[in-house]
Image 1 (cartoon, rainbow, N blue to C red):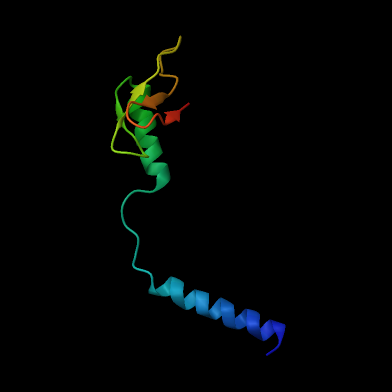
Image 2 (cartoon, rainbow, N blue to C red):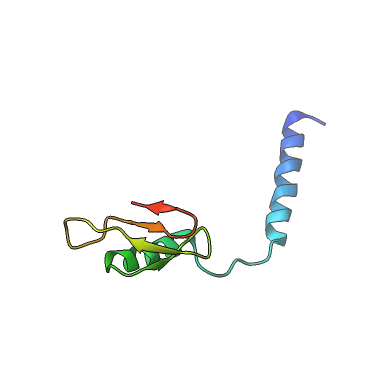
Length: 78
C-alpha cells in the first residue's frame, strides 16, 4: 500500500471513530470559566473548575476581584 493510500485509510478510520462518538452535552470550558469569573467579579465565591471545592475572590484595589483561589485544591485564577 502506498503512503498516500495508508494516510487516506487512517483518515477514513479516524473519521468513522469521530462519527461514532456520542453527542456532547453540557457546558464548554469557556462557559464554566465565564461563570466562575462572573461570580468572582461580583465578589462571590465560585465553584472550582478543577475539584469540588470553592474559589474565594481575591480582593484588589478596583471594584472587580483580582481572581480567586480554591480553598480545597489551591487552584488560582487571575
